[in-house]
Image (tube, rainbow, N blue to C red; front, side):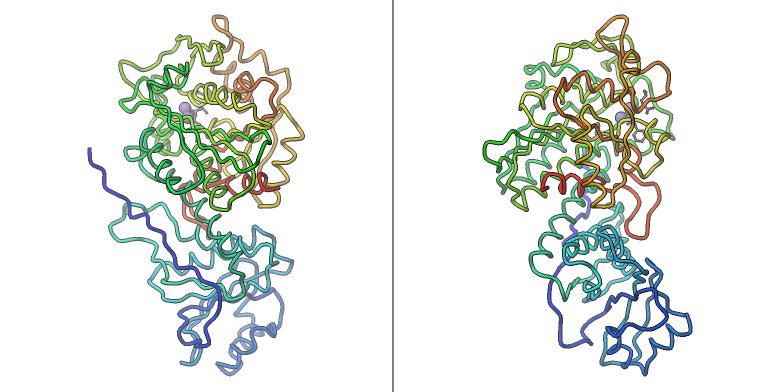
Length: 491
Ligand code: BES
Ligand code: MN
Ligand code: ZN
């Protein structure tokens, strides 16, 4: 089957520096703090229209509530054609504010073609967060409508950041593109993105870089004893893969290994999901896509660290060759697992993938997975569930997440839960006793495959994929945790 190709070229022309000719600016984006008078920085624009901005602010028509956007036509031919006023609020802008305000401002302009757009409120943002403005602008330009004949987001010909350094612009571009890379892979339909095509995408992505990519096909997976990954993929016409990305720029230090769940489509297998629950299951490879996004950023930024990225890729389907309830699988590690629900497939894929991670003798393993609906029941749609065998390591991840404004919350890993994954037939079973505490029992299962190595499990089932748009981004894939992990690795 030949699939249509998505028009996924988000090449926005990003520049630093200003122009002397204001009239060549289509939209000038300025910031307005939440106060009763016009800030002096807007004085020149104010004079263009005979104190029009002062009048609007003093009459309360133009407000600086954080996130409020007001578009104004400029009533003279010497200034920019349009003004977009971004409410900055009262307090200092965080890194997340810088990201989301810029994104929301740019996104509000994509309904029609624009020429040069200038983002002029960087002086209100701490210099260290300037890169987040650029990253936000780029993520605004990527949406889920990859297959609309008429692009729904009309990208401006140029987005200029007058008061940014070239370094911050370049860094922001890399971060934005890395987030978008992860989002794009998640947003692609499952007939386009399946284990082999995911692997191919990664090979192409790192073709001209220092990052080396190794792909294990089904034969290699069999040779390596990855029977758990093969079992999950056994019902599919699309065979599984394991992708290993190596970014080794950190000398002799032991590596960090990032592990992603890459179930390119989760039908539930013989424990078939109802349509309502299956509808978004192309997103079940978001963990793997996040790992690709982070590795991309490390590579482009030349980060001096040793990091390995592993993606365990399989399609969970229904057929005469599907793995079954009651099956017992001997995993790569030698531990046996009893399958009692084929829809608890992510942990089965991760069992082997984590075992491959262990072979690198890492100083830390972080796994990312759209693992359980139970995690969404516990924490809602927007918060990542974090579970660990090493509190210190989790503290580091939490502090990186706080710096980026990404929301994560720890769930407990009491020994109390251990019994729930014990099997009567095999070493462990792939579901807990009933659905209570399902995010934790899933993590308890995974814990069996990391031994004593420092490990954090991030359940991104809720925040990886949004059913509603936000002012700063489209619905669909979000790229959650790319920023947090990059920050943690750099720290
Ligand atoms: N991929 C799903 C989890 C999921 C649900 C991700 C909703 C994103 C949104 C996972 O493979 C799954 O099906 N988990 C089951 C586990 C259960 C059978 C123990 C679940 O959460 O219901
Ligand atoms: Mn499932
Ligand atoms: Zn799944």
